[in-house]
Image: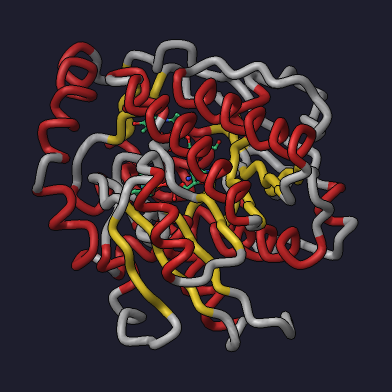
Length: 345
Ligand code: NAD
Ligand code: DAU
């Protein structure tokens, strides 16, 4: 699609969405080079791109986005002209257990990328989330111009990053764009997140811990639709603008759980309603007309996206079984041990 070859620094490219984006981009932009810049936290895995490391158009640099010298060196050394920032601490539950690292990476890290982009004259595209809008009352869909009202440490750190990105456009004229994604599902999502957790628990015959009544509403969007949304903004987006990326349709968490169980032939008796997440946002919903006006259309209905994701976990035990054996066990015990012991229904 692009005629001028790009050298893209994809931060967080070993995570869930970043790795799907790198795979998509290399396949559809045959002149471009991608440099994955990733700290490899518990959420980052080189095996997410194991089929691609021999590609001469893909390079890996291990580093922290909050480390200015290393980011600068990677950009200069690889003659980068575009940064796409996926790197973040991303899980709301983890942000409740240990919030400070969310500020270090999501706020300071994004700020460092902006500074390097400003010094070297680079374009920066920032990946944000529907969570910055906070709980959305029934009947409303968030527009990009709505005020930000984040309610978890994760969401607050992402909102702060968005505001820094917009400030750099206003103050310095830096060519920036932002996309705000809905709840993504698909291959390579860490099993701490709801759909992979429920799918892998169902496959192991273990309880599915649904927070509260399970009637919270989310737009479960397929990660590939997110990737094409970002691509659309990179090719046709306006500098300084924000674009929502989702399907515009929500379902309850219980509906999502039922799709997972149906798809995997799991026992509905495995569902447990457990103590709710503190400050749990009841509903997210976004209007995606601004992105549709650029010619983008999502290919997956949320029902199909969830079913497709569940099947992937059934077919790719090699990927998630080792993750669930490691430090994940301690996290699982801390997050769910008491919850599951307290309540079983
Ligand atoms: P993820 O947790 O799967 O991956 C995050 C990646 O960032 C990992 O590879 C990790 O090693 C890397 N990373 C973390 N801290 C870093 C640091 N300081 N320096 C360099 N690398 C670092 O996350 P994801 O679900 O793929 O999310 C990617 C982006 O999309 C995030 O910005 C997130 O806020 C946003 N987002 C996610 C969703 C979703 O549903 N997953 C929806 C909307 C927006
Ligand atoms: O909305 C976009 C956001 O989606 C992204 O910005 C985040 O990076 C991404 O992680 C995701 O947010 P959460 O961290 O809230 O996703 P999670 O999969 O944990 O939760 C989805 C819903 O499922 C939410 O309403 C909480 C619920 N849930 C989650 C878990 C882990 C449960 O009911 N039980 C669970 O055990």
